[in-house]
Length: 76
Image (cartoon, rainbow, N blue to C red; front, top):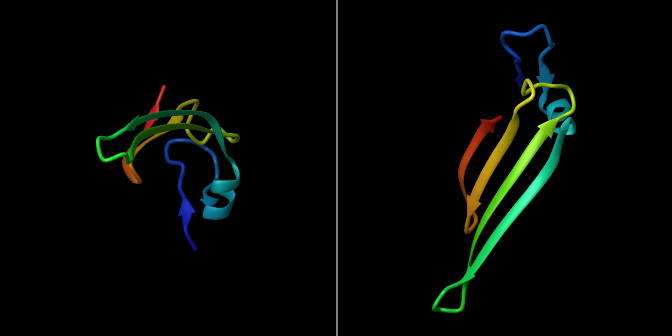
C-alpha cells in the first residue's frame, strides 16, 4: 500500500485512495491547432486543488501536449 507523507506539517499520511478522493479539478485550458497533415495538435493545462490543504494552498499544475505529460508542478 502506498502512503503520501506530508512532511513539515502535522497532518497524517494519506493512502493513495484517500489522497485521490481529495483532489478536485479547478480549471481546464485547452488549445488546439490543425497541422498540415490534418491531425490536431493540442495543449492541455489542468489545475487541481485538494480539500485537505495537502498542497498548503498551492495548486497542482499539469501540462500535457499530444498525449504526453510535459510537466507536473505546484504553483501559487
